[in-house]
Length: 389
Ligand SMILES: Cc1cc2nc3c(=O)[nH]c(=O)nc-3n(C[C@H](O)[C@H](O)[C@H](O)COP(=O)(O)O)c2cc1C
Ligand SMILES: C=C(O[C@@H]1CC(C(=O)O)=C[C@@H](OP(=O)(O)O)[C@H]1O)C(=O)O
View (cartoon, rainbow, N blue to C red):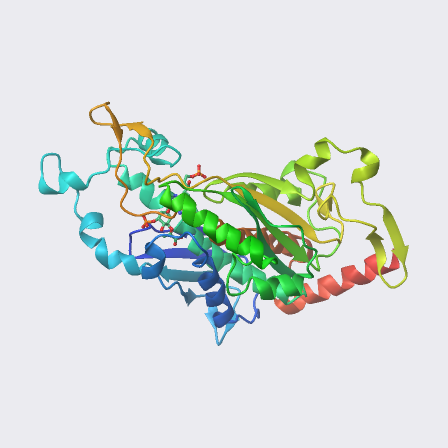
């Protein structure tokens, strides 16, 4: 059974629900750590008032007993505290001409899913689109990814993430060890190594917000301790770098993903790009550099996985862009009630978790078993084989 999950739930509905299937039995789960990751996703400069209302925690309602997975599907629930303010909007159907009609959303925002979703599903109340297309869903993805992260951690695999750029402000390159990066971004994902850059970033977000605008950025995720050979070159949908790219670009507002030096590879010579192969009895095969971000042939090469994602600016703007009312077909410029102006730090936490999920899935495909003990035996056996090679 391959590892898979589904989520359900609306942003202003009662809760988000996720079901994970394919987890082995006897994985010890640390609920505090799981909730800590959800807490991290809510942080970061530039978020709107919604984040002051929500206090995300995951309630595990299936597949776990006495803190350990049983092999049954794991069901998770994240409550929307904002639901109580939306019960009437969410429950009463806006009938044309009725009192509730004024609550119908008929003015699509450029950059959001509103217009395409309305046309595609033939929905005249665009609330039915925005409720599910909202990045509120990423809370469920982080909860799911946090379980994957704990699975990886049992095999010594660590996941870190950081903000590399917010608009015009770029963080200087750092080669911080993964443990230090994790510690640095534990409480505040907007934390960048250099304090001056950090305050430049927050000031920049404040300025953008004052202008009634929004801003995006670039985030990076690093995975350390992966064995050689996760993923495969034999079929397009088994290439792990490709699967990670899909997961990253599927995060709301993400427009691209780079592996290692990424787009820079298009301007450099082969001799400047490829990572030379070394061997020592202590370390086995390893590389003199890691420009390819830990991948060759869709498989991990044992170096750190390094991937970057780019997030576009938030579509809902206080300084509205022009759009067309779907009722009147007349142009309008909308008044906005509430929105994030920058969610790049939160998105960095989301990216860590979607990447963790893909790596865990590939790990289980390679070393699969029904219990942690069986997987560990398979893993140890493979490491011994690689060591003898
Ligand atoms: C953590 C996070 C928070 C977001 N907050 C908002 C928001 O407050 N307002 C908004 O219009 N879009 C927000 N977005 C972006 C939209 O969800 C996204 O642009 C929309 O779903 C359309 O999808 P696409 O941009 O991937 O095409 C957020 C995205 C993320 C990852
Ligand atoms: C709720 C979250 O993000 C939301 C994502 C979002 C969007 O359109 O994507 C719009 C905003 O929702 P609201 O209109 O309720 O303020 C954000 O707050 C969250 O990250 O948990």
